[in-house]
Amino acid sequence: MSDSIASISLSHVVLPLQNPVSDAKVLTGRQKPLSEVVLLFAEVTTADGVEGMGFSYSKRAGGPSQYAHLKEIAQVAIGQDPSDTAKVYDSLLWAGASVGRSGVATQAIAALDVALHDLKARRAGLPLAKLLGAYRDSCRVYNTSGGFLQASVEEIREKADASLASGIGGIKIKVGQPDWRTDLERVAAVREHLGEVPLMVDANQQWDRARARRMCRELEAYDLVWIEEPLDAWDATGHADLSRTFDTPIATGEMLTSVPEHMALLEAGYRGIVQPDAPRIGGITPFLRFATLAAHAGLALAPHYAMEIHLHLAAAYPTEPWVEHFEWLDPLFEERIDISDGRMWLPERPGLGFTLSEQMRALTVETARFGASAT
Image (cartoon, rainbow, N blue to C red):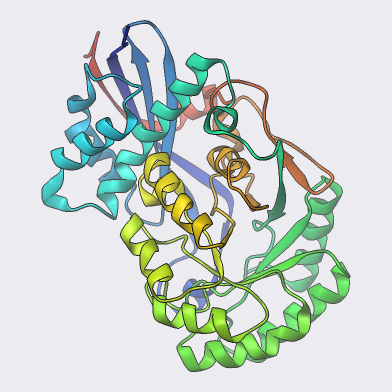
């Protein structure tokens, strides 16, 4: 017999970072340093008492909008069968159809969609990756949080050493300095320090096509795992051209907020590494839709951020992926992910494998509840 969604609780959470960080978008004056992450949590309970938890997030702007949008449409999920994730997803899209099917609209829905997938796996008594059908019990892991542009080369070296000592297998650093020669000096210094450790760089969309081609050519010498977002995230043609020109793989996709936006890469002939972000693309439901198409095209996968979700999705991808390590969200959860031997290991706990912490509750600035016992 089918179950039904009895209640939904939403939480708007503001998580300060201990130290603000800067990437190339800050150096070009397009954004301010990142000082906090704003999250939208959805907690679902069914009539049978099964629970699920999911989240979405924003950086620099959009958090209050995500919360407001899901607060406006969440009621339509009450009474629906939580197993019908695609049906629930579409009903939420139609409830907010006037604001479209990408951007804030889908990022808001993502929190509830993730919660429903977590719920299904918890009810089955399985980690989410096992419910989806895992190819592996661990994934290669790299760290990004120590490689931002406000850090000196010496600081990056120290943080990289600490990451490697903790069991992480690769290091990513930011590039996109106003003077491109500074980028090359920093990459050369970090490569020399790391030796053969896998190294990635991320330009955060700050090069034009001419500069990107020159930089990709110069960076070929450093045996990089990939060069990330050398161009504007929506320049599918430009990224596709770079991916077919250089030996070093090109990676992109983290900023895209719908399956059609990701499909533009494939339609342009992209041959690089795709980096969908489940909270940004709209949740696990659309993430899996695009992942199937990407796998069919033979593309490698390296999901962006949100390792608590993406570890499971990466483990269920056919070819060996990378998962990005950020410790920023640790205060929000009671559990930690096991990392060793350069790999991130699936938790044996059901669902995503996380419970919300008291600190998450303390950082909550606004809540809303729908369904049973709503106030």
